[in-house]
Image (cartoon, rainbow, N blue to C red; front, side, top):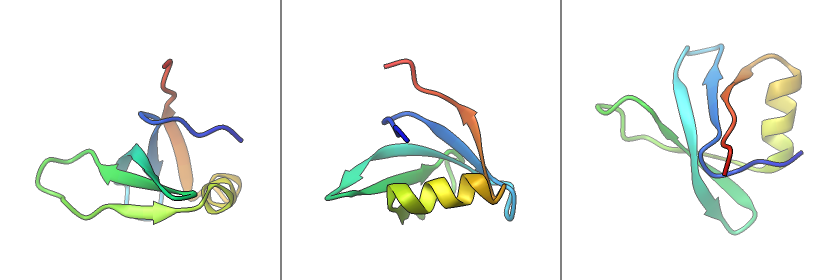
Length: 65
C-alpha cells in the first residue's frame, strides 16, 4: 500500500479527519484537520492498512502529488 503526504483519512470511531503530514522514521504522522485540535497520531503503514480493512479508517481524499 502506498501512503502519500497529503492523503486524508476519516476515523469511524471518532469521526475526525486526519491528513498525512509526513514520516517519522518508518511511521506516518497524521495531523488533525480541525484547527483547534493539535494532537497528532502516529501509525505504521501496516497499522493504517489494518484500520482501513477493519473499516475504522476511511480514505477521504488521495493526494495527487
